Image 1: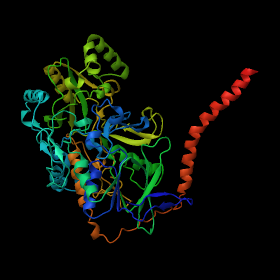
Image 2: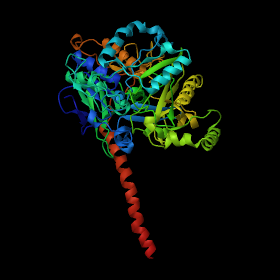
Image 3: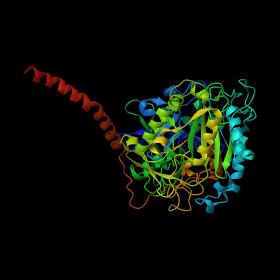
Image 4: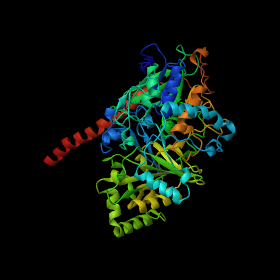
Length: 603
Protein backbone atom coordinates (compact mmCIF):
# COMPACT_ATOMS: atom_id res chain seq x y z
CA UNK A 1 0.00 0.00 0.00
CA UNK A 2 2.80 2.40 0.89
CA UNK A 3 6.43 2.88 -0.04
CA UNK A 4 8.44 -0.20 0.83
CA UNK A 5 12.17 0.21 0.46
CA UNK A 6 15.28 -1.93 0.26
CA UNK A 7 18.97 -1.19 0.06
CA UNK A 8 20.31 -0.81 -3.50
CA UNK A 9 23.81 -1.44 -4.82
CA UNK A 10 24.82 2.18 -4.36
CA UNK A 11 23.79 2.21 -0.70
CA UNK A 12 20.75 4.37 -1.33
CA UNK A 13 17.21 3.44 -0.41
CA UNK A 14 15.27 2.19 -3.44
CA UNK A 15 11.48 2.57 -3.67
CA UNK A 16 9.33 -0.44 -4.54
CA UNK A 17 6.16 1.56 -5.35
CA UNK A 18 5.14 5.16 -5.72
CA UNK A 19 3.28 6.08 -2.55
CA UNK A 20 4.66 7.64 0.61
CA UNK A 21 2.58 7.59 3.80
CA UNK A 22 1.92 10.91 5.46
CA UNK A 23 2.42 9.29 8.88
CA UNK A 24 4.21 6.16 10.04
CA UNK A 25 3.01 5.18 13.50
CA UNK A 26 5.32 2.98 15.57
CA UNK A 27 3.18 0.84 17.88
CA UNK A 28 -0.54 0.05 18.00
CA UNK A 29 -1.38 0.50 21.69
CA UNK A 30 -3.60 3.26 23.03
CA UNK A 31 -1.53 6.14 21.63
CA UNK A 32 -0.88 4.46 18.29
CA UNK A 33 -4.45 3.30 17.72
CA UNK A 34 -5.97 6.68 18.57
CA UNK A 35 -3.46 8.36 16.26
CA UNK A 36 -4.16 5.93 13.41
CA UNK A 37 -7.93 6.43 13.52
CA UNK A 38 -7.94 10.19 13.92
CA UNK A 39 -5.33 10.77 11.21
CA UNK A 40 -7.11 8.56 8.66
CA UNK A 41 -10.31 10.44 9.53
CA UNK A 42 -8.49 13.66 8.65
CA UNK A 43 -7.51 12.32 5.24
CA UNK A 44 -3.92 11.26 5.85
CA UNK A 45 -2.28 8.11 4.51
CA UNK A 46 -1.20 6.09 7.56
CA UNK A 47 1.05 3.07 8.08
CA UNK A 48 1.18 1.39 11.51
CA UNK A 49 4.21 -0.76 12.37
CA UNK A 50 3.65 -3.17 15.28
CA UNK A 51 6.38 -5.48 16.60
CA UNK A 52 3.90 -8.06 17.95
CA UNK A 53 1.50 -10.43 16.24
CA UNK A 54 -2.16 -10.02 15.35
CA UNK A 55 -4.53 -11.86 17.69
CA UNK A 56 -8.19 -12.67 17.21
CA UNK A 57 -10.44 -14.05 19.98
CA UNK A 58 -9.86 -17.64 18.85
CA UNK A 59 -6.06 -17.17 18.88
CA UNK A 60 -5.68 -16.43 22.59
CA UNK A 61 -4.38 -19.22 24.84
CA UNK A 62 -6.82 -21.05 27.11
CA UNK A 63 -4.49 -20.45 30.06
CA UNK A 64 -1.29 -18.47 30.58
CA UNK A 65 0.68 -21.71 30.81
CA UNK A 66 0.72 -21.77 27.01
CA UNK A 67 3.88 -19.68 27.13
CA UNK A 68 4.43 -19.58 23.37
CA UNK A 69 1.12 -17.76 22.97
CA UNK A 70 1.11 -15.86 26.27
CA UNK A 71 4.61 -14.45 26.83
CA UNK A 72 6.38 -11.90 24.66
CA UNK A 73 10.01 -13.07 24.69
CA UNK A 74 11.19 -13.10 21.06
CA UNK A 75 14.66 -14.45 21.86
CA UNK A 76 13.00 -17.59 23.21
CA UNK A 77 10.57 -17.69 20.25
CA UNK A 78 7.67 -16.75 22.54
CA UNK A 79 5.47 -14.42 20.48
CA UNK A 80 2.56 -13.88 22.85
CA UNK A 81 1.26 -10.57 24.16
CA UNK A 82 2.42 -10.41 27.82
CA UNK A 83 5.85 -8.87 28.25
CA UNK A 84 7.98 -9.43 31.37
CA UNK A 85 10.81 -6.92 31.63
CA UNK A 86 13.45 -7.12 34.35
CA UNK A 87 15.50 -4.15 35.54
CA UNK A 88 17.70 -3.59 38.56
CA UNK A 89 15.23 -1.10 40.00
CA UNK A 90 11.89 -2.43 38.74
CA UNK A 91 10.12 -5.38 37.11
CA UNK A 92 7.66 -4.26 34.44
CA UNK A 93 4.65 -5.94 32.83
CA UNK A 94 3.60 -4.65 29.41
CA UNK A 95 1.84 -5.75 26.24
CA UNK A 96 2.75 -6.48 22.62
CA UNK A 97 0.60 -7.24 19.60
CA UNK A 98 -1.89 -5.48 17.34
CA UNK A 99 -3.81 -3.55 19.97
CA UNK A 100 -0.82 -3.23 22.32
CA UNK A 101 -1.52 -3.29 26.03
CA UNK A 102 -5.29 -3.56 25.47
CA UNK A 103 -4.82 -7.26 24.67
CA UNK A 104 -3.63 -8.00 28.20
CA UNK A 105 -4.91 -5.14 30.35
CA UNK A 106 -7.69 -5.46 32.93
CA UNK A 107 -10.05 -3.05 31.08
CA UNK A 108 -10.27 -0.65 34.04
CA UNK A 109 -10.85 2.98 32.99
CA UNK A 110 -10.92 5.49 35.86
CA UNK A 111 -10.40 9.25 35.64
CA UNK A 112 -7.59 10.56 37.87
CA UNK A 113 -8.03 13.19 40.56
CA UNK A 114 -7.17 16.88 40.42
CA UNK A 115 -3.60 16.32 41.67
CA UNK A 116 -2.61 14.70 38.38
CA UNK A 117 -3.61 17.70 36.27
CA UNK A 118 -1.74 20.05 38.60
CA UNK A 119 1.48 18.04 38.84
CA UNK A 120 4.59 20.21 38.89
CA UNK A 121 6.16 18.79 35.74
CA UNK A 122 3.55 20.19 33.33
CA UNK A 123 1.22 22.43 35.39
CA UNK A 124 2.31 25.73 33.84
CA UNK A 125 1.97 24.62 30.22
CA UNK A 126 -1.84 24.39 29.94
CA UNK A 127 -5.07 24.05 31.90
CA UNK A 128 -4.90 20.29 31.53
CA UNK A 129 -8.08 19.41 33.43
CA UNK A 130 -10.17 21.71 31.24
CA UNK A 131 -8.43 20.77 27.99
CA UNK A 132 -8.66 17.03 28.60
CA UNK A 133 -12.24 16.90 29.90
CA UNK A 134 -13.92 16.56 26.49
CA UNK A 135 -11.26 14.08 25.37
CA UNK A 136 -11.98 11.88 28.40
CA UNK A 137 -15.63 11.86 27.28
CA UNK A 138 -14.62 10.83 23.77
CA UNK A 139 -12.25 8.14 25.08
CA UNK A 140 -14.97 6.65 27.28
CA UNK A 141 -17.40 6.53 24.37
CA UNK A 142 -14.88 4.97 21.98
CA UNK A 143 -13.71 2.36 24.49
CA UNK A 144 -17.27 1.44 25.48
CA UNK A 145 -16.97 2.18 29.18
CA UNK A 146 -19.64 0.58 31.39
CA UNK A 147 -19.87 0.02 35.12
CA UNK A 148 -19.19 -3.54 36.19
CA UNK A 149 -22.68 -4.89 37.01
CA UNK A 150 -21.72 -7.74 39.36
CA UNK A 151 -19.78 -7.95 42.61
CA UNK A 152 -18.07 -11.14 43.73
CA UNK A 153 -16.57 -12.59 46.96
CA UNK A 154 -13.36 -10.54 46.73
CA UNK A 155 -15.41 -7.38 46.23
CA UNK A 156 -17.46 -8.10 49.33
CA UNK A 157 -14.28 -8.49 51.38
CA UNK A 158 -13.01 -5.21 49.94
CA UNK A 159 -16.25 -3.48 50.91
CA UNK A 160 -15.91 -4.86 54.46
CA UNK A 161 -12.33 -3.56 54.68
CA UNK A 162 -13.39 -0.17 53.29
CA UNK A 163 -16.07 0.07 56.00
CA UNK A 164 -13.55 -0.86 58.67
CA UNK A 165 -11.21 1.89 57.45
CA UNK A 166 -14.00 4.44 57.24
CA UNK A 167 -13.68 4.59 53.44
CA UNK A 168 -16.99 2.98 52.45
CA UNK A 169 -18.05 6.05 50.45
CA UNK A 170 -15.09 5.63 48.10
CA UNK A 171 -15.91 1.99 47.30
CA UNK A 172 -17.52 1.43 43.90
CA UNK A 173 -17.69 -1.07 41.04
CA UNK A 174 -15.11 -0.35 38.35
CA UNK A 175 -15.83 1.35 35.03
CA UNK A 176 -14.55 -1.12 32.44
CA UNK A 177 -14.31 -1.47 28.66
CA UNK A 178 -16.41 -4.64 28.41
CA UNK A 179 -19.72 -5.42 26.69
CA UNK A 180 -22.29 -6.60 29.25
CA UNK A 181 -24.98 -7.94 26.97
CA UNK A 182 -26.64 -11.33 27.40
CA UNK A 183 -23.74 -13.56 28.53
CA UNK A 184 -22.20 -15.41 25.60
CA UNK A 185 -24.67 -14.12 23.00
CA UNK A 186 -23.23 -12.47 19.88
CA UNK A 187 -25.00 -9.34 18.67
CA UNK A 188 -24.36 -6.73 15.96
CA UNK A 189 -22.13 -3.82 16.95
CA UNK A 190 -23.77 -2.15 20.00
CA UNK A 191 -21.47 0.89 20.14
CA UNK A 192 -21.11 2.60 16.76
CA UNK A 193 -24.55 2.42 15.14
CA UNK A 194 -23.75 -0.93 13.59
CA UNK A 195 -20.53 0.28 11.92
CA UNK A 196 -18.22 -1.66 14.24
CA UNK A 197 -17.62 -5.41 14.71
CA UNK A 198 -20.07 -7.85 16.31
CA UNK A 199 -19.75 -8.30 20.08
CA UNK A 200 -20.69 -10.97 22.62
CA UNK A 201 -21.84 -10.54 26.22
CA UNK A 202 -19.29 -11.01 29.01
CA UNK A 203 -19.49 -14.34 30.87
CA UNK A 204 -17.46 -13.08 33.90
CA UNK A 205 -14.82 -15.81 33.50
CA UNK A 206 -11.90 -13.79 34.91
CA UNK A 207 -9.86 -14.23 31.71
CA UNK A 208 -9.42 -10.58 30.68
CA UNK A 209 -5.65 -10.63 31.25
CA UNK A 210 -5.08 -13.90 29.38
CA UNK A 211 -6.75 -12.54 26.25
CA UNK A 212 -10.55 -12.49 25.96
CA UNK A 213 -11.62 -15.57 24.00
CA UNK A 214 -15.31 -14.60 24.13
CA UNK A 215 -15.31 -11.32 22.14
CA UNK A 216 -16.60 -9.28 25.09
CA UNK A 217 -13.55 -7.16 25.90
CA UNK A 218 -13.29 -3.87 24.01
CA UNK A 219 -9.69 -4.16 22.87
CA UNK A 220 -8.35 -1.51 20.51
CA UNK A 221 -8.73 -3.73 17.45
CA UNK A 222 -12.51 -3.49 18.03
CA UNK A 223 -12.74 0.30 18.12
CA UNK A 224 -9.95 2.74 17.29
CA UNK A 225 -7.80 0.35 15.27
CA UNK A 226 -10.83 -1.27 13.65
CA UNK A 227 -11.95 2.07 12.22
CA UNK A 228 -8.40 3.11 11.33
CA UNK A 229 -8.13 0.07 9.06
CA UNK A 230 -11.66 0.61 7.77
CA UNK A 231 -10.69 4.18 6.82
CA UNK A 232 -7.59 2.97 4.96
CA UNK A 233 -4.72 2.61 7.46
CA UNK A 234 -2.23 -0.17 6.72
CA UNK A 235 -1.39 -2.09 9.93
CA UNK A 236 1.73 -4.20 9.57
CA UNK A 237 2.38 -6.68 12.43
CA UNK A 238 5.70 -8.39 13.25
CA UNK A 239 7.58 -5.20 12.28
CA UNK A 240 10.06 -3.99 14.90
CA UNK A 241 11.43 -0.49 14.26
CA UNK A 242 15.17 -0.13 14.86
CA UNK A 243 15.95 3.35 13.53
CA UNK A 244 14.38 6.67 12.51
CA UNK A 245 16.49 8.65 10.02
CA UNK A 246 15.79 12.28 9.08
CA UNK A 247 15.89 13.08 5.35
CA UNK A 248 17.30 16.60 5.13
CA UNK A 249 16.61 19.01 2.31
CA UNK A 250 14.26 18.69 -0.63
CA UNK A 251 13.07 15.14 -1.43
CA UNK A 252 11.24 14.33 -4.70
CA UNK A 253 8.55 12.43 -2.77
CA UNK A 254 8.38 15.08 0.00
CA UNK A 255 9.45 12.49 2.59
CA UNK A 256 11.11 13.83 5.74
CA UNK A 257 12.01 10.60 7.56
CA UNK A 258 13.03 7.05 6.80
CA UNK A 259 11.90 4.38 9.28
CA UNK A 260 13.96 1.18 9.34
CA UNK A 261 12.37 -1.98 10.70
CA UNK A 262 12.95 -5.71 10.80
CA UNK A 263 10.69 -8.75 10.88
CA UNK A 264 10.33 -9.83 14.51
CA UNK A 265 9.57 -13.51 13.89
CA UNK A 266 12.43 -14.31 11.48
CA UNK A 267 14.99 -16.92 12.48
CA UNK A 268 18.69 -16.02 12.81
CA UNK A 269 18.92 -13.10 10.32
CA UNK A 270 15.95 -10.74 10.54
CA UNK A 271 14.95 -9.27 7.19
CA UNK A 272 15.16 -5.50 7.14
CA UNK A 273 13.03 -3.01 5.26
CA UNK A 274 12.52 0.70 5.43
CA UNK A 275 9.74 3.11 4.59
CA UNK A 276 9.92 6.79 3.72
CA UNK A 277 7.35 9.05 5.32
CA UNK A 278 6.53 12.69 5.91
CA UNK A 279 5.88 12.35 9.66
CA UNK A 280 6.53 9.80 12.40
CA UNK A 281 4.54 9.08 15.56
CA UNK A 282 6.42 7.07 18.17
CA UNK A 283 3.85 5.14 20.21
CA UNK A 284 5.65 2.02 21.37
CA UNK A 285 4.83 2.39 25.07
CA UNK A 286 7.35 3.63 27.62
CA UNK A 287 9.90 0.86 27.19
CA UNK A 288 9.60 0.67 23.41
CA UNK A 289 9.57 4.41 22.72
CA UNK A 290 12.28 5.39 25.19
CA UNK A 291 14.66 2.64 24.06
CA UNK A 292 14.17 3.39 20.37
CA UNK A 293 14.74 7.12 20.83
CA UNK A 294 17.76 6.55 23.08
CA UNK A 295 19.29 4.34 20.38
CA UNK A 296 18.61 6.98 17.74
CA UNK A 297 20.14 9.72 19.88
CA UNK A 298 23.18 7.98 21.33
CA UNK A 299 24.07 4.98 19.12
CA UNK A 300 22.96 5.28 15.50
CA UNK A 301 23.21 9.08 15.97
CA UNK A 302 20.32 9.54 13.55
CA UNK A 303 18.55 11.87 16.02
CA UNK A 304 21.41 13.45 18.02
CA UNK A 305 19.39 16.57 18.79
CA UNK A 306 16.83 14.85 21.03
CA UNK A 307 16.57 16.36 24.50
CA UNK A 308 18.89 15.30 27.32
CA UNK A 309 15.66 14.78 29.33
CA UNK A 310 14.94 11.60 27.38
CA UNK A 311 14.70 8.60 29.74
CA UNK A 312 14.43 10.70 32.89
CA UNK A 313 11.46 10.90 35.29
CA UNK A 314 10.14 7.39 34.64
CA UNK A 315 7.39 6.39 37.06
CA UNK A 316 5.67 3.18 38.18
CA UNK A 317 2.29 4.76 39.00
CA UNK A 318 3.67 4.21 42.51
CA UNK A 319 2.36 0.66 42.42
CA UNK A 320 2.72 -2.44 44.56
CA UNK A 321 1.54 -5.87 43.44
CA UNK A 322 0.69 -8.14 46.35
CA UNK A 323 -1.99 -10.74 46.98
CA UNK A 324 -3.61 -13.47 49.04
CA UNK A 325 -4.07 -17.16 48.27
CA UNK A 326 -6.80 -18.83 50.38
CA UNK A 327 -6.00 -22.11 52.10
CA UNK A 328 -9.40 -23.62 51.31
CA UNK A 329 -11.17 -23.88 47.95
CA UNK A 330 -14.73 -23.37 49.20
CA UNK A 331 -14.86 -19.86 47.66
CA UNK A 332 -14.10 -19.25 43.98
CA UNK A 333 -12.18 -15.97 43.67
CA UNK A 334 -11.64 -16.34 39.90
CA UNK A 335 -15.15 -15.28 38.87
CA UNK A 336 -15.84 -11.81 37.55
CA UNK A 337 -14.08 -9.35 35.27
CA UNK A 338 -10.36 -8.95 35.93
CA UNK A 339 -10.86 -5.94 38.23
CA UNK A 340 -14.41 -5.56 39.52
CA UNK A 341 -14.20 -2.88 42.26
CA UNK A 342 -11.90 -0.37 43.93
CA UNK A 343 -11.71 2.05 46.83
CA UNK A 344 -9.38 4.72 48.24
CA UNK A 345 -7.49 3.74 51.39
CA UNK A 346 -6.57 7.40 51.94
CA UNK A 347 -6.32 10.56 49.85
CA UNK A 348 -3.38 9.27 47.80
CA UNK A 349 -3.78 5.48 47.72
CA UNK A 350 -6.28 3.35 45.81
CA UNK A 351 -6.60 -0.43 45.85
CA UNK A 352 -8.22 -3.03 43.57
CA UNK A 353 -8.81 -6.82 43.62
CA UNK A 354 -7.48 -8.55 40.50
CA UNK A 355 -8.13 -12.09 39.25
CA UNK A 356 -7.08 -14.67 36.68
CA UNK A 357 -9.27 -17.34 35.10
CA UNK A 358 -9.12 -20.97 36.33
CA UNK A 359 -5.95 -22.73 35.24
CA UNK A 360 -4.04 -19.50 34.60
CA UNK A 361 -1.55 -19.75 37.43
CA UNK A 362 1.74 -19.06 35.62
CA UNK A 363 2.32 -15.74 37.37
CA UNK A 364 2.56 -17.49 40.75
CA UNK A 365 6.11 -18.41 39.73
CA UNK A 366 7.11 -14.80 40.37
CA UNK A 367 5.80 -14.74 43.97
CA UNK A 368 6.94 -15.57 47.51
CA UNK A 369 5.26 -15.34 50.93
CA UNK A 370 5.16 -11.75 52.18
CA UNK A 371 7.62 -11.24 55.03
CA UNK A 372 8.77 -8.14 56.93
CA UNK A 373 10.90 -6.39 54.33
CA UNK A 374 13.87 -5.19 56.34
CA UNK A 375 17.62 -5.53 55.92
CA UNK A 376 19.87 -6.76 53.13
CA UNK A 377 19.11 -9.45 50.58
CA UNK A 378 20.96 -11.94 52.78
CA UNK A 379 18.84 -11.03 55.81
CA UNK A 380 15.66 -11.24 53.75
CA UNK A 381 16.63 -14.68 52.46
CA UNK A 382 17.24 -15.87 56.03
CA UNK A 383 13.86 -14.46 57.10
CA UNK A 384 12.26 -16.19 54.12
CA UNK A 385 13.76 -19.54 55.08
CA UNK A 386 12.71 -19.14 58.72
CA UNK A 387 9.16 -18.25 57.67
CA UNK A 388 9.05 -21.28 55.35
CA UNK A 389 10.13 -23.63 58.15
CA UNK A 390 7.59 -22.16 60.58
CA UNK A 391 4.74 -21.88 58.07
CA UNK A 392 5.43 -24.37 55.25
CA UNK A 393 1.82 -24.32 54.06
CA UNK A 394 2.17 -20.69 53.02
CA UNK A 395 4.85 -21.45 50.44
CA UNK A 396 3.07 -24.60 49.27
CA UNK A 397 -0.22 -22.79 48.91
CA UNK A 398 1.22 -19.79 47.09
CA UNK A 399 3.54 -21.63 44.69
CA UNK A 400 2.73 -25.34 44.41
CA UNK A 401 -0.74 -26.59 45.41
CA UNK A 402 -3.38 -26.80 42.64
CA UNK A 403 -6.29 -24.41 42.14
CA UNK A 404 -4.25 -21.21 42.55
CA UNK A 405 -6.36 -18.98 40.29
CA UNK A 406 -9.59 -20.08 41.99
CA UNK A 407 -8.19 -19.38 45.46
CA UNK A 408 -6.11 -16.30 44.66
CA UNK A 409 -6.69 -12.55 44.64
CA UNK A 410 -4.02 -10.16 43.38
CA UNK A 411 -4.19 -6.85 45.26
CA UNK A 412 -3.09 -3.87 43.18
CA UNK A 413 -2.10 -0.77 45.16
CA UNK A 414 -1.57 2.58 43.38
CA UNK A 415 -0.62 6.01 44.68
CA UNK A 416 -0.41 9.62 43.49
CA UNK A 417 2.76 10.32 45.50
CA UNK A 418 5.86 11.31 43.55
CA UNK A 419 8.64 8.77 43.08
CA UNK A 420 10.64 7.78 40.01
CA UNK A 421 13.63 6.21 38.32
CA UNK A 422 15.52 6.78 35.06
CA UNK A 423 16.19 4.69 31.95
CA UNK A 424 19.28 4.62 29.73
CA UNK A 425 21.10 2.27 27.37
CA UNK A 426 23.76 0.07 28.95
CA UNK A 427 24.64 -3.43 30.10
CA UNK A 428 23.64 -5.33 33.23
CA UNK A 429 22.97 -8.84 34.44
CA UNK A 430 19.32 -8.28 33.44
CA UNK A 431 20.35 -7.70 29.80
CA UNK A 432 22.73 -10.69 29.99
CA UNK A 433 25.47 -8.09 29.52
CA UNK A 434 24.24 -7.24 26.03
CA UNK A 435 23.52 -3.62 25.16
CA UNK A 436 19.98 -2.87 26.25
CA UNK A 437 17.73 -0.74 28.40
CA UNK A 438 18.86 -0.42 32.03
CA UNK A 439 17.47 1.46 35.00
CA UNK A 440 18.95 3.94 37.46
CA UNK A 441 17.35 4.61 40.85
CA UNK A 442 16.45 8.17 41.70
CA UNK A 443 18.40 8.95 44.85
CA UNK A 444 15.99 11.59 46.13
CA UNK A 445 12.64 9.94 45.37
CA UNK A 446 13.17 6.18 44.85
CA UNK A 447 10.23 3.93 44.05
CA UNK A 448 9.28 1.77 47.09
CA UNK A 449 8.92 -2.00 46.74
CA UNK A 450 5.98 -2.39 49.13
CA UNK A 451 3.51 0.32 50.15
CA UNK A 452 2.83 0.03 53.86
CA UNK A 453 -0.75 1.32 53.78
CA UNK A 454 -1.50 -1.18 51.01
CA UNK A 455 0.00 -3.98 53.05
CA UNK A 456 -2.54 -3.25 55.77
CA UNK A 457 -5.30 -4.08 53.28
CA UNK A 458 -3.49 -7.27 52.26
CA UNK A 459 -3.22 -8.38 55.88
CA UNK A 460 -6.93 -7.67 56.51
CA UNK A 461 -7.91 -9.50 53.35
CA UNK A 462 -5.77 -12.52 54.30
CA UNK A 463 -7.43 -12.70 57.72
CA UNK A 464 -10.93 -12.60 56.20
CA UNK A 465 -10.17 -15.03 53.36
CA UNK A 466 -8.15 -17.38 55.59
CA UNK A 467 -5.19 -17.23 53.26
CA UNK A 468 -1.48 -16.63 52.89
CA UNK A 469 -0.31 -13.19 51.77
CA UNK A 470 2.38 -12.85 49.12
CA UNK A 471 4.37 -10.36 47.08
CA UNK A 472 6.70 -10.58 44.10
CA UNK A 473 9.98 -12.38 44.72
CA UNK A 474 11.70 -9.21 43.51
CA UNK A 475 9.94 -7.23 46.27
CA UNK A 476 10.71 -9.81 48.93
CA UNK A 477 14.34 -10.58 48.14
CA UNK A 478 15.68 -7.67 46.05
CA UNK A 479 13.71 -4.69 47.38
CA UNK A 480 12.71 -4.07 43.75
CA UNK A 481 9.13 -2.99 42.95
CA UNK A 482 6.86 -4.24 40.17
CA UNK A 483 4.46 -2.33 37.97
CA UNK A 484 1.96 -3.01 35.21
CA UNK A 485 1.67 0.72 34.46
CA UNK A 486 5.06 2.24 33.70
CA UNK A 487 4.85 5.95 32.76
CA UNK A 488 7.07 8.84 31.67
CA UNK A 489 10.50 9.16 30.08
CA UNK A 490 9.46 11.52 27.23
CA UNK A 491 7.89 14.30 29.21
CA UNK A 492 6.15 17.38 27.86
CA UNK A 493 8.11 20.58 28.45
CA UNK A 494 8.38 24.24 27.50
CA UNK A 495 11.66 23.66 25.67
CA UNK A 496 14.31 20.97 25.25
CA UNK A 497 15.88 21.82 28.62
CA UNK A 498 12.66 20.88 30.42
CA UNK A 499 11.10 18.24 28.17
CA UNK A 500 11.45 15.89 25.21
CA UNK A 501 8.30 17.05 23.38
CA UNK A 502 6.24 20.24 23.34
CA UNK A 503 2.54 20.60 24.22
CA UNK A 504 1.68 19.33 20.71
CA UNK A 505 3.73 16.16 21.41
CA UNK A 506 6.26 17.17 18.73
CA UNK A 507 9.91 16.45 19.55
CA UNK A 508 12.10 19.49 20.01
CA UNK A 509 14.47 19.99 17.04
CA UNK A 510 12.62 17.44 14.85
CA UNK A 511 9.51 18.78 13.08
CA UNK A 512 7.08 16.00 12.21
CA UNK A 513 8.39 13.59 14.87
CA UNK A 514 5.83 13.02 17.62
CA UNK A 515 5.60 10.89 20.80
CA UNK A 516 2.06 9.81 21.71
CA UNK A 517 1.84 7.17 24.45
CA UNK A 518 2.28 6.66 28.20
CA UNK A 519 5.83 8.01 28.10
CA UNK A 520 4.47 11.59 28.03
CA UNK A 521 2.38 11.14 31.21
CA UNK A 522 3.74 13.57 33.77
CA UNK A 523 2.85 12.09 37.17
CA UNK A 524 1.64 9.03 39.06
CA UNK A 525 -2.14 8.88 38.63
CA UNK A 526 -3.07 6.57 41.51
CA UNK A 527 -5.52 4.81 39.14
CA UNK A 528 -5.18 2.66 36.02
CA UNK A 529 -3.74 4.97 33.33
CA UNK A 530 -5.19 3.60 30.05
CA UNK A 531 -8.11 6.05 29.93
CA UNK A 532 -5.78 8.99 30.55
CA UNK A 533 -3.33 7.85 27.85
CA UNK A 534 -6.29 7.59 25.45
CA UNK A 535 -7.55 11.09 26.36
CA UNK A 536 -4.07 12.63 26.03
CA UNK A 537 -3.70 10.95 22.62
CA UNK A 538 -7.08 12.31 21.52
CA UNK A 539 -5.92 15.79 22.48
CA UNK A 540 -2.64 15.37 20.60
CA UNK A 541 -4.43 14.33 17.41
CA UNK A 542 -6.95 17.15 17.73
CA UNK A 543 -4.07 19.60 17.34
CA UNK A 544 -3.00 18.23 13.95
CA UNK A 545 -4.95 19.93 11.13
CA UNK A 546 -6.83 17.97 8.46
CA UNK A 547 -4.82 16.88 5.43
CA UNK A 548 -6.71 19.23 3.11
CA UNK A 549 -5.59 22.19 5.24
CA UNK A 550 -1.88 21.48 4.64
CA UNK A 551 -0.46 22.40 1.25
CA UNK A 552 2.90 20.74 1.88
CA UNK A 553 5.26 19.72 4.67
CA UNK A 554 8.33 21.92 5.11
CA UNK A 555 11.56 20.00 4.34
CA UNK A 556 13.89 19.35 7.25
CA UNK A 557 16.96 21.56 7.57
CA UNK A 558 20.19 19.76 8.32
CA UNK A 559 21.97 20.89 11.50
CA UNK A 560 25.38 22.52 11.18
CA UNK A 561 28.09 19.96 10.51
CA UNK A 562 25.72 17.12 9.60
CA UNK A 563 27.15 14.60 7.08
CA UNK A 564 24.46 13.63 4.59
CA UNK A 565 26.26 10.65 2.99
CA UNK A 566 25.59 7.49 4.98
CA UNK A 567 26.30 4.26 3.12
CA UNK A 568 23.36 2.19 4.22
CA UNK A 569 24.36 -0.81 2.11
CA UNK A 570 27.77 -0.87 3.81
CA UNK A 571 26.08 -0.90 7.24
CA UNK A 572 23.85 -3.77 6.15
CA UNK A 573 26.82 -5.73 4.78
CA UNK A 574 28.69 -5.35 8.07
CA UNK A 575 25.66 -6.61 9.99
CA UNK A 576 25.21 -9.67 7.78
CA UNK A 577 28.94 -10.45 7.85
CA UNK A 578 28.92 -10.34 11.66
CA UNK A 579 25.94 -12.69 11.82
CA UNK A 580 27.59 -15.01 9.29
CA UNK A 581 30.73 -15.08 11.43
CA UNK A 582 28.77 -15.97 14.54
CA UNK A 583 27.34 -18.99 12.73
CA UNK A 584 30.42 -20.14 10.81
CA UNK A 585 33.29 -19.66 13.30
CA UNK A 586 32.06 -22.22 15.88
CA UNK A 587 31.47 -24.77 13.09
CA UNK A 588 34.96 -24.18 11.67
CA UNK A 589 36.58 -24.56 15.10
CA UNK A 590 34.71 -27.79 15.75
CA UNK A 591 35.70 -29.18 12.33
CA UNK A 592 39.34 -28.24 12.90
CA UNK A 593 39.36 -30.01 16.25
CA UNK A 594 37.79 -33.14 14.79
CA UNK A 595 40.29 -33.30 11.91
CA UNK A 596 43.54 -32.40 13.63
CA UNK A 597 42.60 -33.78 17.03
CA UNK A 598 42.09 -37.24 15.59
CA UNK A 599 45.38 -37.07 13.68
CA UNK A 600 47.27 -36.19 16.87
CA UNK A 601 45.60 -39.09 18.68
CA UNK A 602 46.57 -41.47 15.88
CA UNK A 603 50.27 -40.55 16.24
